[in-house]
Each structure stands twice: as structure tokens, then as C-alpha cells.
Image 1 (tube, rainbow, N blue to C red):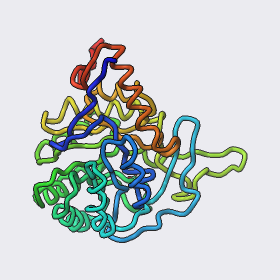
Image 2: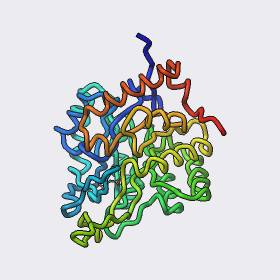
Image 3: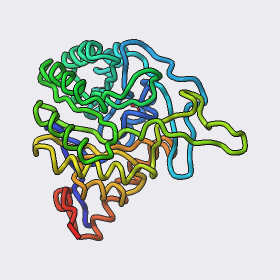
Length: 311
Ligand code: SIN
């Protein structure tokens, strides 16, 4: 049988396949992370952590939608020290470990990045784009703050640092952000986070369908795939070649993953589909991607990566 080599790497960290879990659903507790390790996800990515344990936002804070979901989780997590202590056990599960951190200030991010720089994690993803913390703006939309934060965070050690970005919608924003990213040794970006502050109303109850922030939450899933693809594409064209891109947003089958490959993604993350389907999604999507590439006559990711054809 023809086979396709789906192996890739991010910042020199070898990944057995193109797909991994996103920092989002089902990656907060040890038990959940163990399930990710046993799945076909090529890495173990943790939920974004904060300085202290967080319960997160009040329920209901997640709702499935026909084409995805809306959520305002509010960063429920065990606190960064718990993940730091977990690192040796996570590493022993045999896959690259990526920690996601989401401090509420540059100072907090410095403390957490410094701590993980001294650990055995493989990659550090700094989340600049959670839209769900009442009173806290998304750093990714504040270009000056992004620049100050990167100046501080990229000098703390040798472990590769990546940034999880919010979706952008204007060419001027892609250019402004890429110009900043190109000034620093950022090794990868992950784009996109959910589209923040969207509102779904139930006309029967005449209320929003989630409680936090008056019903405003991050839109996920199929709804955001065109936005994710455009962000990956724009950044691939604007960033230096040595900045890699992890695509995320609405990937629920092998063809979706293939489209992200054409747009230029070096790897992809699965969030909503993992939430809805469970860990079997990684193997299913991997098999579907393989089958689609076989049909096209492709044998490795580089046959199609960043090869979107102009019309
Ligand atoms: C959340 O926990 O509210 C979602 C995380 C994120 O959007 O980064």
C-alpha cells in the first residue's frame, strides 16, 4: 500500500505526524493529558496555564453549535506549578510536550516562561489571545504590548518560544504583526485562536446561550476555518522562512488539514473536533489526510506545503 510520510518538525522538535491537540479542550488534568498521549496526537499540548489555579468562568460556558461551538471557559487550569511538576511524567509518556502559558501581565509571563525554560518541555507556546477574561484585553491586538512582551520573553533561555495569535482581519494588521515577529527569535506562531466576543442568542429563551461576559464568547469550529486559513496564508507570506506556523481553526477532516498544508502550515492543531468527537479524531483525520494525499500522488508534506496555486 502507498504510504505518505506525515512527519514534520516545529523548531527542530520532531513530530511523528501533522496533527496535535490544541491548547483548549481536554488537556487540563493529568488524566486528560494521558489520553492525549495515548491518542494519535503527535504532541502533548497543555491547557494554557496561569500563575495560580483557576476555576474559570461560571457555567454554562461552552455550547456546541451546528458548525462548531462557542465557549468562554476563562482559562480553567491547575496553575503553572502543577504543570511544571508534571513535565517529567508527561515526557515519560513518549511524545514532545508543549506547554501553553497565559499570564495576565508581562511580569507573570516572564516568571512562567523562565520556569519552563529550566524544565524538560520541548516547546513553549505563549497565549496572547484568550478573549474570555473579563476586564483583560487580548494582548495580540495591542501591537506595542506584543513588542515589549517579545523583547522580554525571547531572551529567557534556549527553548523555542511560539506565540498563539488572535485572528486578524485586515492586511494592515497582518503586516504590523509580522513586522514585529520578524524582529525577534520567535520560532513559531499558532494561528488562530477563537474569534472572540461573538454572541449566540436563543430566540426561545430570549437569552444568550452561555453565561460569562453577557454571553460573549469565542467562536470555534467550521465557522472560523476560512479565517484560520487566511491568517496562516498571510503570515506565511509575510514572516521570515525560519518562523514556522501551526494552523488551527475548524479542522475536522483530512481535507481541512490538507487545505492548511496548502496555505503553508507546518503542523495543525485540533480543538473543537477533539471536544466533540474525542481522541479518536486524531487517527481518523490522519488516515483521511493520508488517503487524500495518496489520491493526489503526494508522498510527503513538502509535496503540497505552501503550494497554494494562484488562480
Ligand atoms: C479559555 O479558556 O477561555 C479559552 C482559552 C483561549 O481562548 O485561549
